[in-house]
Image 1 (cartoon, rainbow, N blue to C red):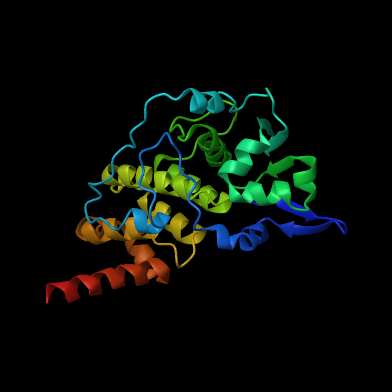
Image 2: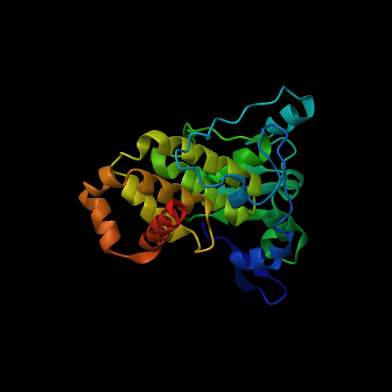
Length: 265
């Protein structure tokens, strides 16, 4: 997922997360998609609070068609009027600076700042999931993203449980709070049935490896599932190994137990 931005005139390489630090004060800005019925008050982590059953997770509803929004959506992966080149792996995705800058503070800063990529209007993303990057750009244009894989890549799509995790991480990178909410909502829907999957433990490991300690959306979701289905999960050796390893997940799960016992008194 790493992109490199080159600050001129000395052409010093600056890793893209530094752009996020420069723009940290903009984090509270809500980028509201008119296509998705998602509450917009509060942070992404506050929006979808811990739910023991995850039963409140529903597919977002689509609004009525809007000619302006439909017109912007048609520009996705369309070279008409494109003035930016996005390289997602080896694929060249034509893009439009007005769309990128209006949706993502990352691109707003990069395109307006004194960076070589912004001046050349070329950005390369060669690490992480190419499918997750694609879905993030699709979202910037359409206000949604498809669960089905795009056909432009010759690599397999991400597994069902990690697909939305990776979109969430990319959304954090591009500072798209509304996309984080949507990805978290989709992930919770998958968890309702797929917590029994053998991939659940790998999913937990990826979440804790790719998010910070202060992140509560994804982490809270898997901790709640582990707490609610502890008896069934404890029968699985990979889950027991995860607990034996210790780490932040084990700490969070113990914290969940402690909070539950405190409430029961």
